[in-house]
Length: 283
Image (tube, rainbow, N blue to C red; front, side):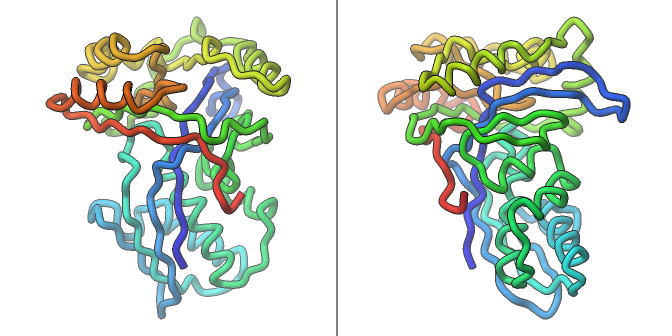
């Protein structure tokens, strides 16, 4: 069985405050794009998770955790071989690890014939990570709470998106970004509500897009500010950070912008993609 694990971008990302459980309360609008990892899943005598990036193989991967969690829920032995082919840059803010975990839940639910609905998979997904529930369906959605409360929104399918992914990772990236966030960066979620309202009315206002981590990411990621300025000088709409970064995106975009940005960043240790906003086929 072969499944795609799609990347996401955050059209908005607001932090409302810190919760009593230590997590942060967020409001974010998420959108899947057709940059994707691929998971090949088949029956096997025991659980085995391999990846074309050897550092992601084995039991430390979220895919392994997803498999063992689903097997425990179904009261069966976790017997499968999962091979991941990575295309989503690791640690980029595009949700690759979370998407892989969600894709594994969907695929293994079928392979093991556990008979769980998507709604029944949600608690397992939420335990794996804040973004994982969204990836069970993908598309365009509002996520609240830690990110585990997901509500579908009118689709932005087939809108072209330019992605710029610096070739760098930071250990404990999300923790470091959150550590730079102060109460002054908190909001009431009004930006997200405004974009939801416009989308529900059949419109999309690119000027509303906002990500709270843009207040701190340029101080945390070396060279990101310079990269941002270069990209901004070449595109028609303002670039934005996806998730906790360092990936940047612009939308709507097109082939001409892609060619200009790719040429300009040829020697800048950054990957450039022209992708589409999509509704995944399994949704």
